[in-house]
Length: 105
Image 1 (spheres, rainbow, N blue to C red):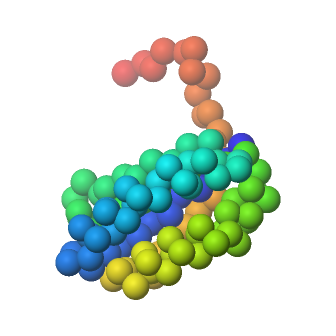
Image 2: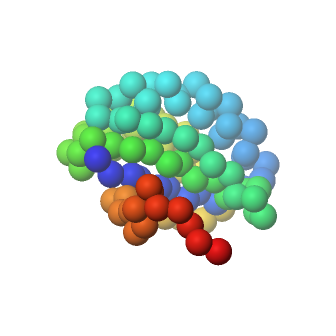
């Protein structure tokens, strides 16, 4: 399993439309084969920046989604609302500290 993070910077006037559309598609994305988790995050300091945080079983599952009719429709609706080009990262979670250990101050 791995995590996909996508950073999107929207034109302010497009945010309500983006949020409304996200509400209509989020369950479809969450139910897409291989998608284990999807969350929308908003930057604390710049409220025109949003991130999608999703977890996928395999890279092939993410690629299947990215090649799907669902994604093409979501992206066609979302991309014109951007202020700048989206950025995306696929990352593996690595525990640097054993979670059973207590943090010392």
